[in-house]
Length: 398
Ligand SMILES: [Zn+2]
Image 1 (cartoon, rainbow, N blue to C red):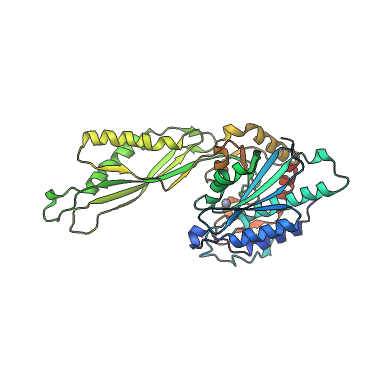
Image 2 (tube, rainbow, N blue to C red; image 1 turned 180 degrees about the horizontal axis):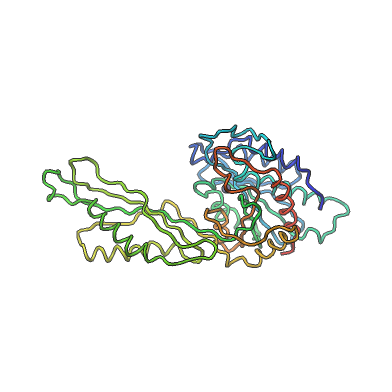
């Protein structure tokens, strides 16, 4: 394959870092990621690639699909990278500067995860250029390749959910594998935990604190609820995964009561549950409800109910994608790179793809240790490695 000019990948990344794309749920702007999506649309079109805007309902922005087709019968390979970043508040560098110094490029999103997006787009442009060259052999380009830039990964996963639920079913193809770009130092991450967060509320009866017996304290009820959940639910979690560790659950917020002289009518706790691959997130409420039912039986005065989850994010289960993982490892081995699959503690868009049985591997340039930091940076050297890896993978047979 022809080598990508490193400067072009670098300058593409700089142009992406220069555009503020702080997640709309953080900035409060409904069109927070529109400017970068429009920029990537223009760049992709300039590169001779087909671009499609896929509107994300409830926002004034869109997922951007960039494709190169080699033939109707060819299988599809999908690449994915999110366009949003976390906040720039408290940063000690110019968040949009893209300054390069000492082999590092600095800026919000430089590492997480605009570098993935920039190098995927560079690799795709190179793949398409090869297709146009006269001496290109058909067998060197076995795949139709799609790259989707998604919105809202950092908070709600709204972009990938819209892609999976609303966009992909109408595209007329289904990928045999998906590569999700996140900073993994170009190591294959094939498993991570999912998350379920939800509230539990108790309801008492308010009364003046000079006559507490006239009321029923929602806080006193909650004390029993917490004890029951900790001793009968959390302590019962034993599922373990070799790559992502043990299933976890913790009660991390409590709020209750209204005034110092009123017996509290309301109390609420919020629970964080980490779902390991192989566990079913949908089974969590039922298991907790069983514990609450036993508590209600023992203490009929307790009024307690679980609320709707704030977030449900499936784990990335490697079981579904062994063949695709092997393909990714082959490419890494060809390049003389570490191909031992890893698990991650953080969540990614990959789990949404794995949920619909598209085998997904998370792999991208940069180190997660520099993501979300006050001086976010990426080693420029990582860009060339990533572009080469993505390009080689595009040329692999399904
Ligand atoms: Zn990310």
